[in-house]
Length: 374
View 1 (tube, helix red, strand yellow):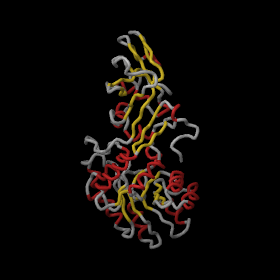
View 2 (cartoon, one colour):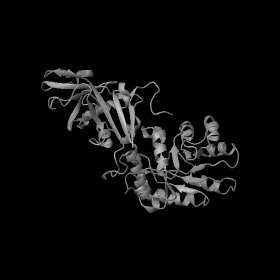
View 3 (cartoon, rainbow, N blue to C red):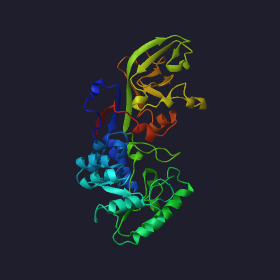
View 4 (spheres, helix red, strand yellow):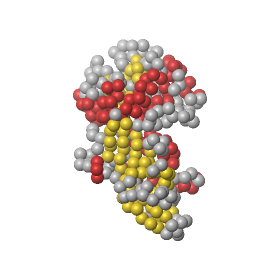
């Protein structure tokens, strides 16, 4: 897996996603410290949450991480080629089409149903696996009763038992305590296995949630993991877009599709090379989309320390920003406007589009030139 198409020339790209691997490592160290006696792993699925799985995982391995979580066997195989000694857990588990990759690349499937358990056991005794027990999310995992039944079979010995929080981002939610109790009961059936429950938000729930192995995700990449709490994580990803054209428009003119933005003054407009094909959501438009009917403002950028709002609808490849209030010379063709990063928090940018930082970050398109610094 590469972090950009082979033909992409960074100098020709109109969007840039800068990744601070030093900040990523600092965030992992913070999560490891919060994990107490538990070992700290890392979720690097979805191409490292959009930041590039291979450079991200390589940096985390150098920092001391040994356990990585990917979504499917293709991700796992790509990661194995880069990290031959790592423990790589495949969250979507085992199914017919994935078996060859799982076996060939020594991947650890997280078995999510009795069907997957049977399929993996047919691959031969002794191959490492993890068992996912559903404790209240009703997404993946065997039931607690099925887990107890598997524990009675001495030939089934997973190396890891895990579950997943549904509401850990809301610490006071009663389901958190219920899931911790249910998971503690389930893992007791497998005393030889390590146990893992806590994601980024779960790590903040305290010692009862930590068990043997934690698996932070969004927090590593600088995103919020706990609602209504200041985000302590360092900024990892910075998205910028290039100004292609500056144009003058008169009061009363309209901007973008549908003529939903009507200018109330003579304006200067920066037309930038980013759109919804790059993962900059149309729902973040300045007007003309359902979300604006809620009264919430649209997305904005920052240039020269000043806020510049999106004008009209975000289009497939282009977005318009109102730069009327900038000082002369502050913006020119070739200038770069920040869309999230040090000046605009990832999750604030996501909220403007009615979504969450996870989705905004993982949606970043492959036309964005990824630049790494450490």
